Length: 170
Image 1 (spheres, one colour):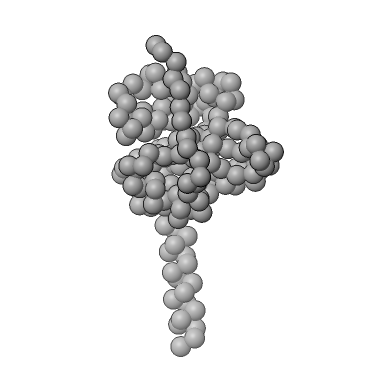
Image 2: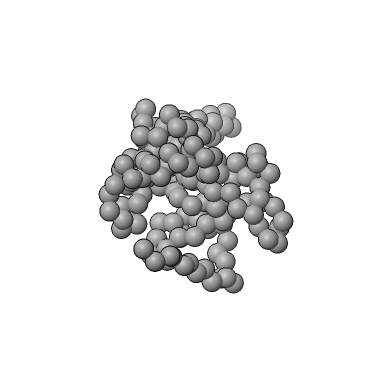
C-alpha cells in the first residue's frame, strides 16, 4: 500500500513537471525582435493602444541596442508566447538596484498554463543574478488578472504611496 501511494505521488510530480516543461523561458536578444514585437503589440492593444507592430518593433530594437531593458520570452510549440520586460531602477531606501517589471504578457491561447508565474519567477531570479533588491510594478486597477496574480506571486500591495505621471505636451 505504501509503495502504491509513493508511486502515485511520484506520478503526480512527474505529470506536473511535464506540464511545466512544455515551454522554456529564455533571455531575448535582437534575434528575437520580430516575435517579441508581435507579442508587444498584442500587449499594447490589451491596454487600448492602436495596433502598430512596426512602431513597437522600433521601440524594442532601441531597447535592445542600447541595453536599456532586459526581456525574457516564454517559448512554447516553437514560438514566443509570452514575455516580461524589466527596466533598471535604483531604490532610495534600500540604496540598491531594483528592477521595474514594466510589461508582462502571455498570449491568450497560452494563459492558464503557469507561464506568467514562470516569467515572474525568472524575473525574481534575474534580481538574484544582478544583485538587485527586488522588483516593483504597477498595474491598472481594472487589471483583474494581474491584481490577482501579483499577490499570489509574493508581491505586496503598496497602499502608502500615490503614483503620478507627467507627460510633455505634444
